[in-house]
Length: 406
Length: 170
Figure 1 (cartoon, rainbow over the protein chains, first blue to last red):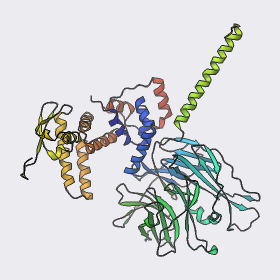
Figure 2: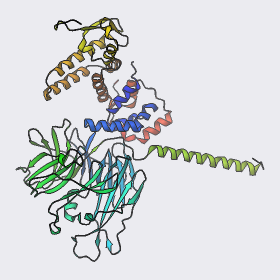
Figure 3: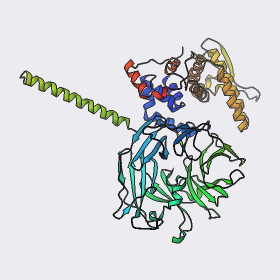
Figure 4: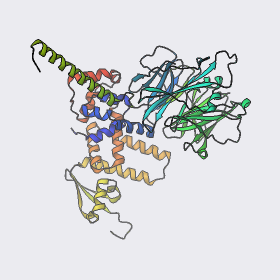
């Protein structure tokens, strides 16, 4: 019986799905070390992204469902600890980690592939005196600070004046806080740009989960819709840089016709501008080089059809395995494959989930939430402390009981 | 080196079981181990190269694979060619049992034929991804160095990963 060398076994492991690798930790201690190794985990993730494998789609409705991207047929309920029925939202995904919101006070990070779950510490929302934060006015984003390999959650709470009768006032106070997984703590952002005060429009952002930041190029993005009454005729894209923790302005594509409703999305890590022209047709642009205005390229254009006679919302999700098609979510109801060559569209039926959903792509990965080294060191320290206490107990006993001088 | 364009250079390889194979230079150059050897010893091209770690059964299959892939590469790239390559690779692996697959991997690893090794490793991954821990230990020849308590603990921690596994058929 031939025996394969460890580097061949490692190469085979790169190609295995996460559930298999979690099981294969039981093969032997050397195998477990390989699978737990941060370098292996990173290479496995990179390979998944490069070859477009281990991809899944989260369907967010009343409940959360997950469907494998390769098969795209049946959605299965996403199980996680503390699932207490309806209402959990997944507001972001990055490198296989999902950010979940059960309530404003109950946020968590979850890796559905390894089933590792971790609650975030609670951070109060502190409105200034005379103001309050109403439900529906809190917005979130989740992503990775690539520079420090840290995962961060951004929370923006908008405050309304208590005695204001008009709900759609123009100027709002904000609180922006950032949670860092590495520090396991929240930090308030003190420098807020002035335009934030009129960024969020209640109806625009509450629909289609537009309150969740879109991650691309290490930056979380939201759209600031036009405010004609304030002299802003076009939408703007606002970004929050996860490394510098500052707000940045992001260049938009130059479209000949500017009468569109703007949405942002991410496709294969690149920022997309989804331009909706009166629900009749939608153009999707991709910024091929992050931050470079000239690199905005129109990728595809979708017209309304007899089957879909109004395009209320369109989100590009992912390229097909060979990059010849793009999977689109339309009207929070349908999945469509758009063929980039033939420009034809084909509907996809996914069974098992609710009829209305917002979709998001996530990659299955071994990325850990707990810092294993820190946990190991903590356990080691605890063992040392326990040993010390035992030794002291024994010494006390001996010296008192037998009147020994030690 | 002959000036005539018709004559293609041939390299002789001798396997572990003492069979000699004459292969075209282009094919021998697919074996990075051999290519490196010739790059460093340009006068050695007339000699027979010994391959003590490769059986004739393996070498013959590997030569077939390299020949076919060279032919595919000579044609213009298109999605139908890609499809044909995929089908060829599937057929190449399908009928082989685990032992034969492992022997090919060891040979491809020794001869350093990256594309073939990638393809074979992927085939192994596809074969074992739903298999039990015991099956894969046997497949890889791994020794279980966990104590019974350790193994029970690690299994309990990841119980869900053990669901839906294929029953062992070996």
